[in-house]
Image (cartoon, rainbow, N blue to C red; front, side, top):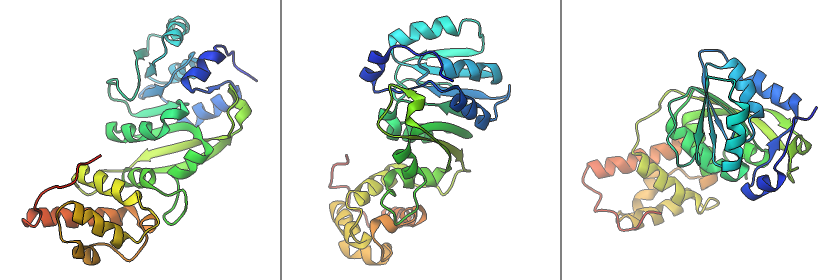
Length: 272
């Protein structure tokens, strides 16, 4: 059964595909296992079809939406619910209060940036709908084509599982690809790292993902003013896309050790 839908031209302009299948919506709600103790974040609330169901079950809902036309619709349909806070703006830029769960069908165009921001903010559990190809990147194993910097960053902090697939005709406008429901569960904090250094290192490594890690690391060390020969003792004999997140963390810790020991002459390469 389809939910009421409108604003197809606006959806195309914003790169959004709105969920219109009630069975899929109900499955998402069921998987979220909501209670009145939950404060739930929804990113891209649209016209409020999912928001209403969240409000019926959660203690509070933080509904983020950037489109002025959709905000006017949201304010109307959510007026009966005093436990919904509408946040106007781009999720990647606005401040949001703390939350413990995320339940959303976010705009696919911001999927990667959304994951990085959520990991920075922290939460307990998320049920999210992404394009199927993107979902497979989140759960990819090392050594596969889908494995990359995004996967590494997610696996350091959380565990991701695909819980089901969503056909493309469950959305309007109908996208060109199918989607998937993804569960993300945060893990306890791991090893303390210089986060800026880790991100810089990982970005550099995966810019040459199919090369041997030692060879790529030599270039990184040279760009940082360090002895490239150190790469032989720091990096395992694997290609970059075969490195486990823990192995990249080990490399980062070794670099931090060099800095503590005064062997780091300074950064000579501008970070991007």
